[in-house]
Image (cartoon, rainbow, N blue to C red):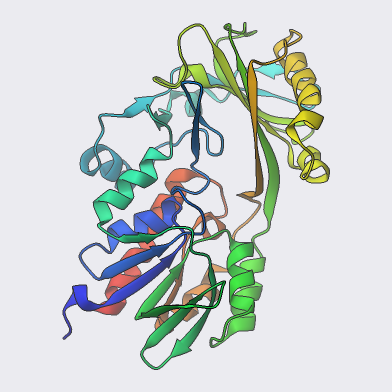
Length: 349
């Protein structure tokens, strides 16, 4: 039997699903993670500006799954782990606010003092995997020795015994569509069953605390009938915002975001301020500064055909991510990555 660490595995995508899988494979194989951007953690994303840290993708994570809780609380460093105080309230299409689900609000909400992207960084460090950032995989081909990957620019990235694909399902489908592999058409169709919501995420920073019409950390729309989907007060996250300031993370609805996807921050800011001010019951002043993130694939509306995708595992091709879970939850993506790693490691034995 070959030495386990002599076997090479490629993971495409350095979101938390891919990095959790890399951690799960740390003793089974040599793992290389390919990531198209400069950073890691995918939509569990954090930026820093003017002394502020803000989570502009996933807002927090929970740890209902025992395996995820054990990983975060017992394996990874916890010195920066931070619980978010305050409840999440709801609002409807008319902007009427209500206290949220009491059972859900009893469950702890987590981030890190330096931002939610810290989770991916810690997973990468614990995995000992090699990261090749700013490397977009363009296609893959099945060969007798395994899978050969090519960068989008055409250069050879090497041959791997197995490959785990973790980007959003539509991007993975596009990758397979131009690749040479068994059952390609069925796999592409299985992935395209998971369509995604497009969402614009705004960050509005104010040099004074903003009043709130209730004891909440955030507001979430529940009926999909409002132009705003989410408003969160980033100063409720320990270590994120200097004292005496307010920073709002505002995620607009997919229906509002789609036709405005290419518009600039300057074009959209006044409409966002108006909509959020109406929810909070007070006209908002111009922010000290603002930011905009365009999420073409923000959250899945449903799951891919997992049963069909699993058929490719016998050939060493694996899939993970929120497109398989069918929900955009950080903890679900972590668990999905760990489960894929366990099945992949069993294949290598």
